[in-house]
Length: 237
Ligand code: NI
Ligand code: MN
Image 1 (tube, rainbow, N blue to C red):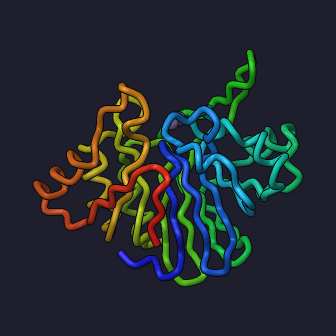
Image 2 (cartoon, rainbow, N blue to C red):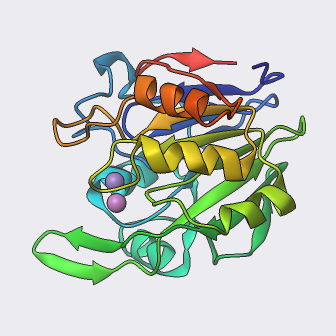
């Protein structure tokens, strides 16, 4: 699939770094230092303009506090995550909630629902992180990318398809904490995706879903979505 100037790098698990045709850098779900799948060569960044957070679990926002101090990005997340980010030193936040769209540096970012939980573990404290979410990002070149966060499949993915028409999605497939390949294949059908990048798999032994199983379930269901299997550190464009 041609991304027409957008670059997407998988940093392992649900963490992605994306670069727009204009050179803006967007990170989704910053989990770097403790992420066993992030290559050592990809743990430092020259700049980060925006950080989008889907929910408060450590495997999604574990490096947020560190990265806001180093790069001063705009933190985009549900209201409660932004409040916490400010406490952790974020100078720039763009709080939103589900159904809302923000225009950020030429990007249109829409917050959509996810079915999951979202407590922040902050040292010994458990802090409510609001609700979990996903994002649909529309780039300047018209490409629309949906990052589902952690979720199961849900029928309202059909609404996301109808209203926002994502071309490509990052969907969790690891099972146990999110949907596995069975539900992810159904999600591809609801979303009518051209392509899917599987995420949230292979990080730990408990996450047993694989891209191969997703691909075979898509074939069995007659769904034509292409499975883009990339390795952590790899960039597609
Ligand atoms: Ni989670
Ligand atoms: Mn997770």
